[in-house]
Length: 112
Ligand code: TYC
Image (cartoon, rainbow, N blue to C red; front, side):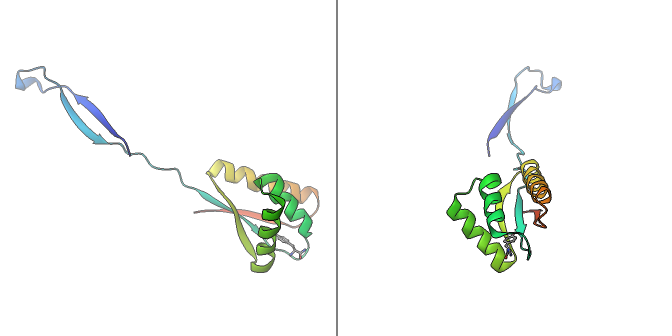
């Protein structure tokens, strides 16, 4: 957190033009992050999910296989954490791609 000094003009009844430096704590708030998750289903082919993880989430083939198997066994997995806008884009890309290939794959986001 940075400290931003502000300058306040001296009050007129002080009979001086001296400036006063006031240390003010900057109110910076980190933007919220969102988990993007893939959900398991019984129909989407494993290779298709692996392809999605490589294509939209920049995973290596080995990483993608590992995460796909986690989703397959546990029911879901977090595949990335992003700003709201990027998370929404990822969800849309995955859902559009799955729909175009007629797979029921579901991708959702949730505030961290
Ligand atoms: N359960 C699917 C199968 O056995 C594979 C799968 C994995 C589907 C991950 C969706 O998000 C998913 N073909």
